[in-house]
Length: 497
Ligand SMILES: C[S@@+](CC[C@H](N)C(=O)[O-])C[C@H]1O[C@@H](n2cnc3c(N)ncnc32)[C@H](O)[C@@H]1O
Image: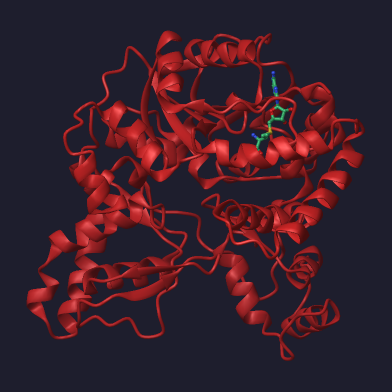
């Protein structure tokens, strides 16, 4: 089946990825010395944008920027354009086009996103993709390209090979998904009592796939093209196309020390940064990359300029523990919106994150944050700890490198909307139809059905008692739903106007 038919038959699930947001691309590129265009007034292109799940929320929250999306699949493009019309957005278009043969004009773009494309298209389209990036990237422009990586993907490839064997005589897309699901069940049953390493690994994969949507199973494991590449081969192809590899979005995976002392000492003598990254891939068994590229006439720094981090504004949605300990240097868990805990050690960092959580989605300038944190820690009685700003810098950078904390070129942010008799924004209503919310900072939140029902009903006339009733009727988990809490949360995520 052709790629076009595949995506027309089973459209890709709407997806928004914070790491592809122009703000995030600008911050990383700035750390590497690139003079980026202001994201708020940039021209942004997404190749293979599906139905605009990533691009449309960006266009909504960044009215001063201009967005173009292209995709091969008419079904997805029509759905995306219909949503753009519903939202009345004038700063975005989504067109049906083949990236290998399309006319995007000669104005160029400051940010270009290609997620889930490079290793999922044939070799000639891969070359066309890189040539297009080189043609369309303006000076100072940044491109994001993700790809499945070898040799790590070989492990997933095992399951792909089994599935393709099982589906050798099944052509219809919906039937392929159904037979694939049955086969995964068959494998899980058969592996149940086996203790071999391969069985343990497959069990983990099967559990993950069990939670994944059909569109992921179909387009990742059953795709007609899925050709993972070695990191160094990717870099070589990129450079033949007149582009340079800058870094990847998971900055911590570039530093051997992050993986522990043995990795650090094994790689200590390798000076070539690209070769070091390749060996890191081997040791970490990495199967996926999210690479940032620039034109080869840029002169990026070889390593990030850490000083520049202090010139950024920071924002974070990490929830502090009930009582952050601002006296002692001891780890306490701060949790992200998926429930993952991030240990935070220094009192200055705890004070910083507690402040950022209170003002989210605002981004606060590093110097201002440091002042706030020092004052709070000093007020808890220890002036010596309050002066340890090197520790603050170190721990904040670590959290940033792990993407638990984010940075922006500018301070500020959209203030939360009213929570008295609120209306849901048109974007929040539309996204809630797919059971999710994309916030001002491009974070994606999965919603329960009760929250979706409230968002659909919020039209500016409802009081809290009516909202509580809607929550109960829609099967909210709590016996006494608290509308005020829910509304504060929706306001925080930019879903109210
Ligand atoms: C795996 S999906 C990724 C969608 C989206 N970027 C995301 O992450 O949610 C790949 C998309 O690329 C599109 N595509 C594949 N080949 C293409 C081509 N030659 N030109 C334009 N789009 C293409 C497909 O139709 C599909 O929507």
